[in-house]
Length: 525
Image (tube, rainbow, N blue to C red; front, top):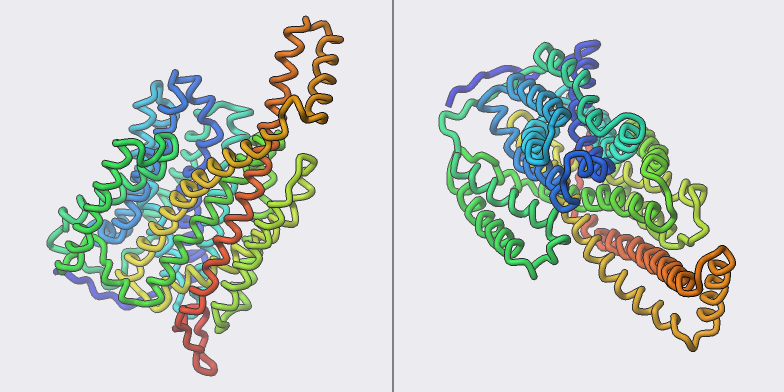
C-alpha cells in the first residue's frame, strides 16, 4: 500500500463556495438526467423510428450503468485520485450528453446513454463526499442539507425541464443543455476538488469483486426496469436474470468479506447506524421516486394534465423541501433524529391519504397543500437519514459509505416503481371488475346514459350504427377513467400504509445525546 498522510483541512470562503457549487451542480446534472428523458420518450421514438418497447432501453441503459458505478466510486477515487476521477466523470458525462444529442438511431443513443450513466454514477457519490468533506464534523447537518437539495430537486424538476424543452425546442436539447454546465464544472473540478486526505492507493484491484458486483446490480436493475412489461417471472428471461443476480450477490458478499482489498467495503455495515441509514435510504428512494412516478401518471391519465403542467406543479413542493432542509439543518443540532423521522413519516402518510380522496373534479388547487406537506415531510426524513448513515465516518470510509447509501436510494427508487406498478395493475383489474357489474342492460342509469349519448351523436349527423358504436366507446372511456381514478386512489392509500410500517424500525436507531456544549447534530451516536 502507498499512503499519503495529510492532515484534514477544510476549505473556507470563496474556495468552499465554488467547491460546493461545483459538486452540487454535478449531482443535479446526474439526478435530473434520471427523469428528464422520460417525458420525451414518445417524441424520441417517433424521430428515430423505435418502438415504445425498444425506446425504454434509453432509460434502462442509463439506470443500469448508473447503479453499477455508484458503489465503485470510492474504489476508483482511491485508484485514480478523487480530483482525476471526479473530473473524468464530469467530462465523460458531458461528452456522452453531446453524443446522445446527435444520435441518429436507437442503439447509438442507448450506447451513449449507457456511457452517460457510467459518468453520472461517478458524480453522485463523489459529489456527496466532496460536500461533506468541505465542512468540519460539527457542521455535517449543513453539508447534508446542501446535498439533500440536489437529491430532492433533481428527480422533481427533471420532468418539467424535459417537458418544456420537448414542447418548445426538440428532444436533442434535453442532452445539449448539459454541455455548458458540464464544461464549467470540468474546469472547476480540476481547479478546486482536492484529493482525499490520507488517501491509500491499493496495489491490487479486486477485479473479481467488480465483476460480481456488475453481475449483481446490472441484472437486478434490468429485472426491476423491464419486469412489468415482460409479466415478471412468467418470462424465462426475467427469471434467468434474477437468478444470476442472486447467485452473483452471494458470491460478491463472500468475496468482499474474505479479502483485504475489496472493491466495496461492505464490512462498514458493522456500523449499526450505517446499516439502519442504508435501510431508510432504500425506503426514502421508494417514496421519493415512487411518488414522483405515480402522481404524474395519475394526473395525466385520470385528470388530463399535460406533461409541462405536471412538472411545473411539482416545483413548489420541491422548494418546500429545500426550505425545510435548511431550517432543520440550522435548528436541529443536537436533537434526537428519531423525532424528526417520525414527524416526517406522519407528514408523508398524511400527504398520501389526502391524495387518495381525489375525484374527477379535482384540480391543482386540491393538491397544493398535500404537496407542500410532502415536501416538508421529505425534509424531516431525509436530513436525519443522510446524516445517520454517514455520521462519524471520514476519508476513505466516508467515500465508501456515501456510495453504499446512494446505491441503496437508487435501488429503492427502482424497487418502489416496480412494486407500485404491480400494485396498480392489480387494483386496475379489481376496480374494472367491480365497476363492470353496473354496466348491464338491467341497470337503468347505464341504459339512460347510453341512450342519451346515442341520441346526441345521432343528432350530430352520425348514422344510427355509428352513433351506437361511438356511444359504447365513450362509455368504455368513462369506465376507464373511473377505474384508474379508483385504483390510483387506493394505490396512494396503500403506499401511505406501507410508509407507516417503518415506524417500529425508527425506534431501533441508536442515538446518544451529545455531551453538554458539544455540537453533535444528527450524527452523534
